[in-house]
Length: 225
Image (tube, rainbow, N blue to C red; front, side, top):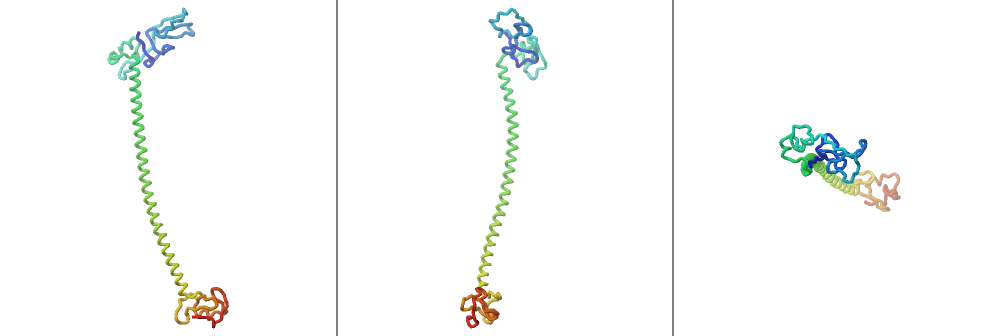
């Protein structure tokens, strides 16, 4: 017997058991609480006398997208009278519904793939731009790092030169007047008591004869040069 599954119904309630439709629908039980069955699902052991056969009055839609018919009756739908494509197919077959679902899911998956592809390309572009920016700033940082290293090396050399100069100045200059030693009145001299060096002029001119470095007492006669 022809049977139409629920996927094609536009208006109407199907069998309480399988939700499908047959040309006659069977109502069993009191009117207020009756059960509705298709011809295949009628319980064989139901002994009630309240059984009513009613022609299927549901309205159905053609699954073909290009069909111009909006709704059709059970007989029109099963005979495929709504369009030429429907007349070549048996739309009551579950196999068609399965194929239709597979096709619909393929279309949905294809659309989802396209959306995901756009998101992927957008994310890839953002990542590439971020990588380019990262590489740019890393190169700038390395340039500054190299410049800092060079500056530190030069500063270390300058400090070393200054230390050498200070050491030389300490050896060549008087600790009191800071003048360079010469062979005249600023001869390099030191008290014999401690040996701390200053120029002869400064040592002789000290009002109290104490070493400028260690404050040890000395007499002018104790100066060597």
